[in-house]
Amino acid sequence: MNILIIGSGGRESAFAYKLSKSPKLNQLFIAPGNAGTSQYGQNVNLKVTDFDGIASFAVENEIDMVLVGPEEPLVKGIHDYFLHRQDVKHIPVIGPQQKGAQLEGSKDFSKEFMLRHQIPTAAYKSFNKSNLEEGLSYLETQKLPIVLKADGLAAGKGVLICETLEEAKTELTAMIADAKFGDASSVVVIEEFLKGIELSVFVLTDGDSYKVLPSAKDYKRIGEGDTGLNTGGMGSISPVPFADQTFLSKVEERIIKPTIEGLKKDEILYKGFIFIGLMNVDGEPYVIEYNVRMGDPETESVLPRIESDLVDLLEGVAKGDLGSRSYTVNPKTAVTVVLVSGGYPGEYDAGMEIMNIENVEDSIVFHAGTKEIDGKVVTAGGRVLAVTTLQDNLFDALQQATADAGRIFFERMYFRKDIGFDLL
Ligand code: AMP
Ligand code: GLY
Image 1 (cartoon, protein in one colour):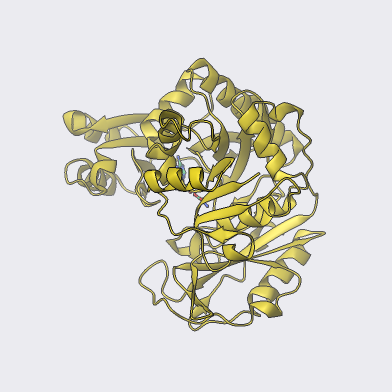
Image 2 (cartoon, helix red, strand yellow; image 1 turned 90 degrees about the vertical axis):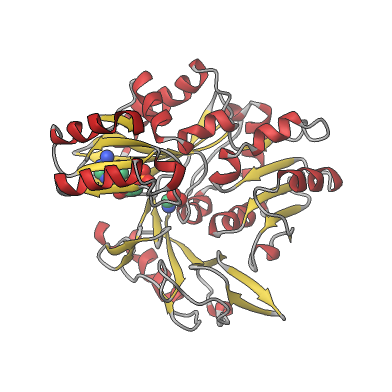
């Protein structure tokens, strides 16, 4: 099979790494990719939202499958575009059509979906310009802290946890009346605050059957001890020690099955990954959010644990016979440590030469924000590399990943040395 991956981050590097191991793979392309993806396939200089360009490339290069990494092209309808264009409609796209992608593209849509299908989630109400006053009064009746969520995609910044009523009122007004997050906050979901510990569960589905992928936990804050600003993700671990069999079977019965059934009842044909952000509240799972793609940096911990051929599983998604494909998971623990540019998630410099990756022997180094200039690999983003190791237990994996992260060097490099230590 010839496969085209859409995206350029650590997640797409992990996909490229995993797909490249398959005996079913013929040629692999990554659009646009990064300095690391070129070791697994050929990078293609196309933007992830250039649907015309992507489709034409797919025709010219006899692509048999398109795997979409990030949410933006899905929410903007890349799958629908392929279905509606004669010369590419036979090429399966892994990732939902626009309607299904609303599970991530609209918080209001996803909350209504959960309510309709009795999927446990925080209590909520949605407000817009026409009922802003009602929203402000509603806030007075709610417990603190309270969560405000911009309905649309806001580059991961659209969720605010307000500690005081005054703050909540100011923010609600800023979001709706002053378009704090542009169009994305013209509708705001006000949601009950759930107190617990978060984890991510991933599902691959052909629209009917599904496989539950390894669960993972990501570390979003920039600082050690989970302090400081939110980032795209500073590290991840898989499996999650507190997500034991009892908890995971609650997740499957109360959340995964009703989600797949709900999509069918709503006549949303969904082929792709579902990322369920969960809160474990005293042993009971609640959905915080759906994403319609894999997580980053969770993918870097999850995929190395999947022993089965991922091309075979994706073929099962495309053909609708995923249920009959073999699927096994490695019981070892994966830890991923993300190396970022100094200053991230604020301003940072790019163009720093990255050295000593070759010194890493017991981890996989996935590239994220990197590019190659004159034969040198340099930084080209906030999250630069993701270092993943697989070991017999969490303690060994933490030590190995941290040690290997420290073997790499670029100017102003930073990484957290405490990824997963809270769970030991
Ligand atoms: P989201 O963009 O939906 O992933 O939300 C960002 C983060 O806000 C989540 O990862 C949680 O840490 C937090 N969060 C979202 N909703 C809630 C909630 N209802 N209760 C507590 N924390 C929440
Ligand atoms: N790691 C969280 C995300 O990918 O959205």
